[in-house]
Image (cartoon, rainbow, N blue to C red):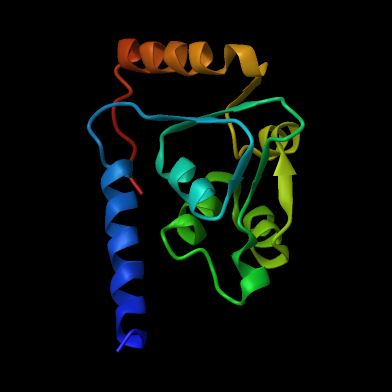
Length: 138
């Protein structure tokens, strides 16, 4: 019965994203274009998030518009990152954010030109490794 598998798939997704969050090395999500739902949840499992300032970059958790919630850890990680009121606004409205808005709220750490996105992510990893910031716990 497929209905019995939904819970299993949610749990598997939670386990995978938690393993990303617990990696013993710095992790960074380089975001360009649409980063919605599971994409945002995987970026939240990373220690750092850098987004391109391209107008196509949109970040959000629109699951509520489908009658579901962010089930792979985003509903826990986002409030811890930006506080419950701001996180609830994003999760309960399903609205998406531009890179600049995400930066202003603290969802992303840095916004850069699209051409420099990968270089910025590489620099962040190098800086984090050099500073010894290898782990973050949730």
